[in-house]
Image (cartoon, rainbow, N blue to C red; front, side, top):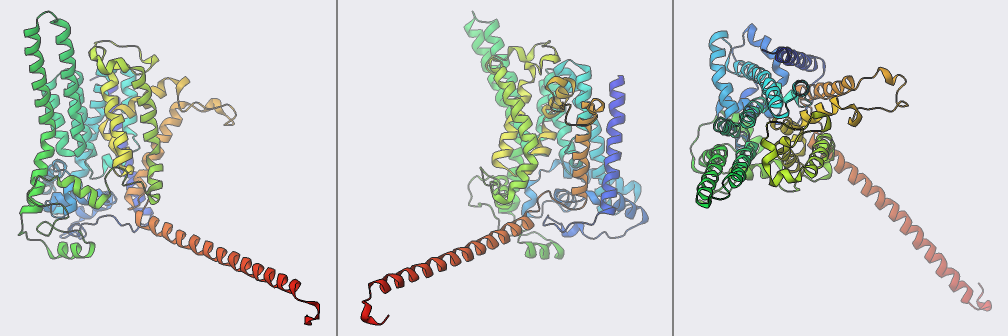
Length: 522
């Protein structure tokens, strides 16, 4: 094992322990915020608590917030609520499988074993994903120190809280980076299989189908270059590449359609399902239907995609559907990642336009030195990151952008590393007048501190059920503010109109007085 890998293992493990400690402190010291997030009724109470159960809940209970409630509810009871079908099955299945072993060894109850299993699973997967990102960066960029810095930035990612909590980000990053590493080393069969597993983890795994598709496009280009005189041989080879491209893409996106078929069966075709009384009461209170109840999706016998309908119904997912004034803080939250990816991505694409059509340079064994920027081999990864960013900004809940990019693409870490290593073009170069002792400020310290502060803030917010923008409260504030402004404007207009009316009356009386004859007695 290289020295870089040994250091990365220590940094990754230390970062997990550090952020878990911050989560514990935030959960103990700071009061919980009353949020409008989903709270699964079958996860509220912990039965048959032992001392070890209470210790586990004391250490990690602050991580079971927001979407973690959905994942653990699915891991315990399966797909029961209609909203559960927005979450793909591989992570809950992995947590449930590991919890059986944990429960058998430690004697914990079901809920505690699920919570502990999810934290352990995510911690191990994150450490392995760190090493995979290092290997991927080294394979693509051929620069050991650059790859090391990229992995360090991954350990301090602003989305690190989602890599610790019972979310699917760690598993998705592991599968995606594993597929990318195999792709970068031209091992297409394992690459396609790992990308297919990523689709079982999260819906945006279908975008990874672009990697084998682009590789086959390169093969077609290479075939035309090598066999330009033999048309029959070219036709056979091209047909084979097209077939492999379709097959590879089909394998990557197949898990998505399998889960949609399963969702449609449960939501539209299964009418008799037994649910606990607590789940029934929760469904009546919140209006979220259970499986077996009338669905919020179209069940008319035609082909339907429950995922998209449920996202649109419960989360306002759709083109520009999230563009509301009350969501402005969420857009501000996502603005840094969106700005960085789009700025560097579009600049990179404009400088490498020829590589989009002629992919020869992308699969070359050597590339330009890192001192002049990211090499053309980064093109496929950059296109994926830019596409994801634009999709997040226009079509989905924009606050998801940071964690989606952080777990789906190495680009954000490569950009950070490139800025860290090239100070002249860095975001963290300061003017001498900005600080009293600018010479003592190192770009590395500022950049890492910024990363750490974002990560720590995310830990505090999640551990206390705080959203960056609690939508219901924000909507109430906006509504009350609008009403108050409207009332004030109406009052002002009424006063102004009253004054104008009084002035007009006085004017008319003055005119009448001037027109009266002198002997009228006025």
